[in-house]
Image (cartoon, rainbow, N blue to C red):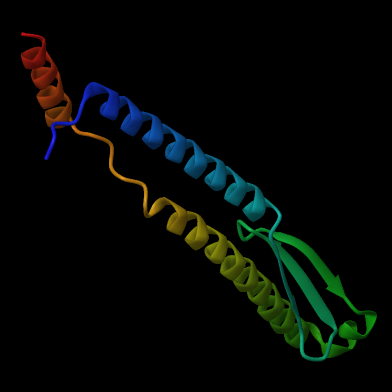
Length: 129
């Protein structure tokens, strides 16, 4: 097997940098998509609707005027359930985005370590003699 040349090292470093930039771009895109997540939920009777963002924050709650007939306890339970369901929906969407972004990084090779670089410098120095 021929000894890799310094030119091969440069090509490998450039490849690693390109792949690293691609991964960073995809992660930034994933962050933007998470920012656009809108988890939604609605009660079975349609009286309560809620939305949540990709970070779990409640962004909307809509009560049908008929919901006021439920009574305080029933309305409170229904609102809580719908809010939690909207948050779970947003969490599911966010997890899918994160899992996809992390899958994109799986094939990224680890950067060369100090030992590799030291060996390559020594090899280049030997070749200069």
